[in-house]
Length: 157
Image (tube, rainbow, N blue to C red; front, top):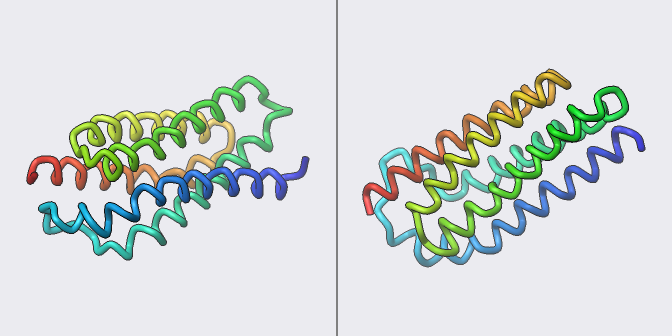
């Protein structure tokens, strides 16, 4: 399987996770989210979709670049991709906790675990393919910001 096919498969998976999370997010953004107190640094709602779309694309490319090394570093690649799938699952779960259950505290606990799993995935990816590791840096930064935002919303409400 060539690199383009791997990128396409990874894109489909990552964007499907993003779409799945958006189905629970969208109704709450229109109903519950406007009613809660948010910190002064809360971005406007329109910012989230393009940022997350870009991050899912970066994640997919990063995963595909690592996947492309499976013949040379089979065990390392399998472990790295397992961590990638775990963090991707946690990524989706956060939306269900925060927007679906409307539970900022539970979402905060989960997003800390998510950030740690992204960091571990970054460490594994960068050892296999430097570019794949660098592609996860914006994701790490954004989820760090999201964790601070999540904590602030929990505190204020």
